[in-house]
Length: 291
Length: 308
Image (cartoon, rainbow over all chains, first blue to last red; front, side, top):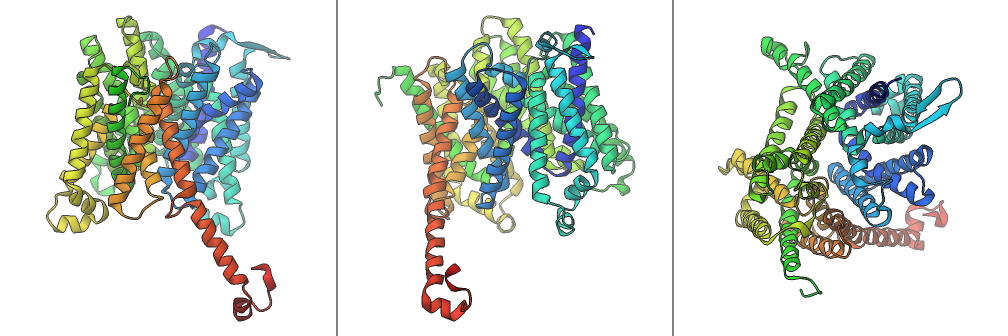
């Protein structure tokens, strides 16, 4: 496959997996939790690097899952001690992120892992770091990891679709019929962390948030059905990733930045034109508005 | 303040002290308005404005960049409000969208400008993580002046703020315009954010607003004392962080300030007299002891024994 082909494939994989997870995030009103996890994953990656001294995929995945779960646990713990949910999110992730940045600035300071890279992502390098797989041949490492993460996410979501639906929409009912709501919460946090770290290489810490939340919110304006919302969110993710890439090539600018920007464009279009909840539809049928 | 620091460094230290104090106080307002994460969204949303402000003049000119940052942060706040009020998307998702899309747009512009100007790019990258050392005396004056303005507004109208935050309906009944108060609050919040971004950076500016307020909450129930403590914690974090980051060459200031604030938070969490872990632990221990006393056991828990 060509250079641009690999980049588009990587970006689409990011778009799909983030879109699927993002739909649940938006419905569970945990959008800012994704922001928190995507920041503190940096600490996990840095710690994994400091321990193993290599930037291989699997160590980083483990470090990131640990950091993500730690964030979720810390936030929950502070909240249970009486701090507002919002404030506890703010305290935890900024502290962990700051520790990560300081570790990079003071301990790591070399070409392998710099702050710029982890924040902005460097999708342009992805096609060069290849590995060989049996039967398939040479593929970029990031594509391999992203595919595995997508498969994990798909299995987790399709396998427990009913449970996700119930715990997202009516956690009290879910708890009363014996679904382990708390366990599902932490499994979900782990899924968010895995997706975040896999997408990290490609789009960086902050653009991950764009990929997670914006397509899902756009999809939320179109439909009331969860399965439909997930599908749409995945499609919007791909559309914004691909269009973002072409905008970046056209203007010769940061690819990850323009992907985040084009998720915003997709959302704007949906916000104006969605037949159900868009501005235009609302304007034309003022009596049927529902919030 | 002569810890072997240069003249310029002393001024920088003073300005981060004032900045931290102002951020601590406005952070209390944000805490009670339950808008802690709003400050995070707004500080990210300020990035495009900073870059555009730079691009217009082609040189680093702090007043123009601050104006740009304020404009783009306010625009972000407006869109968040618009999305929330005119669609089914909730506030947290709206904040996430604005935060990431604006930041992405800012990074796009940053790439442009870095190529366009070439020479001055180092000054721009420092807006992401903050580089207090890059401030010159004019910047310090501007920053301190604006921070003092915010402090002044917060202290002069203290009674009104208190009313507005804790009993908005009563405040309205007394004739206090909640629209004006809201605008003033937003103005102060954005002002603190934009003057902080050069020293602390857009990503971590929110921490300086959130963490001191949460830490102060562990010491007192009185709003006045919470504000005082939060201002102290914020100012302290600013000074400690700036000093620490001065030890290494090119170390970013923001993360060190945030780590200082986080340490103060951990200290408050452990030892705070209102709801600190130690106090809660002692209380629980005492209650358990009381329950285990024979007289109490005979009264309430005759069959359980000492399991308490």
